[in-house]
Length: 118
Image (cartoon, rainbow, N blue to C red):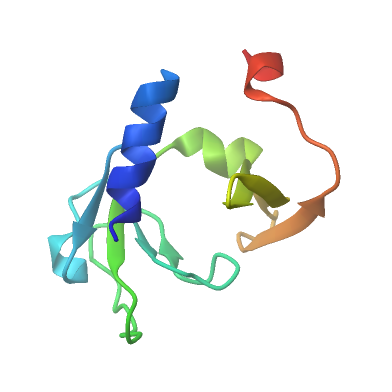
């Protein structure tokens, strides 16, 4: 199953923008200026921001690497991620960058609907 295609299809159906995302086979395939992410990453530990030299990415069986357009506001403001299973919201987390440069997240107990955010 290709989750990237599913997410792009859903965004198109909902009329919401989505960052361009593509599967890559190795770090050397990551386009300049893109973020590299690993599927099923553990709390942001496998997210590499754009750099001149591609990072040495660990090989994790059954996981693929993605290249995604860089969104500088995510570093400044953070992002909400909602996990949905069977059409039911399981939880929402807020991921943000600390002053030290590393990333952290917290579980959200309330969130805004897309309509409220427009």
